Length: 176
Image (cartoon, rainbow, N blue to C red):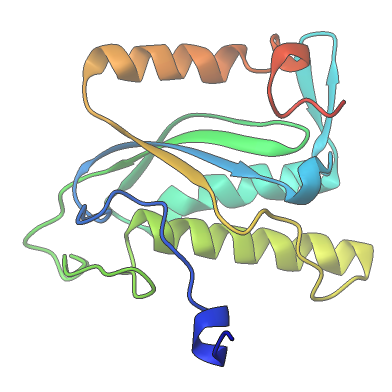
């Protein structure tokens, strides 16, 4: 029999022992719940954002505006997911330096988990407000992340993001 504490225990898919607030580049994919196409549609080879997609786009941009050590690289809002590269810079010597003792369930404020949690929360509130459906989840419970370790990988991921709308029908997120 499961105890109540077991029901709420989630296993992290993050790299064990890795500090996701440290300087580096991260490739992020955040998917809409049940692959629902909430953010617009592909017209030809271009992504056309609807109101919800524009909200997701604008909130992604705010990610770097709100955090001194965060830089955004390539990103795209697709019909049912978002791909983006987040670069965490080093801001030692400033008052904004996040502590590095990050633990699952207790992320630091400028860590990838905290950034994604804040992004998902803000977009969810905005979309649910326009749909008049407060409290309805719009995202999958987790997200995918890949630590970009070298320049070659960075360029390949940038190319993948830029070409994502062109390759939409071959994408694993394409709704059947």
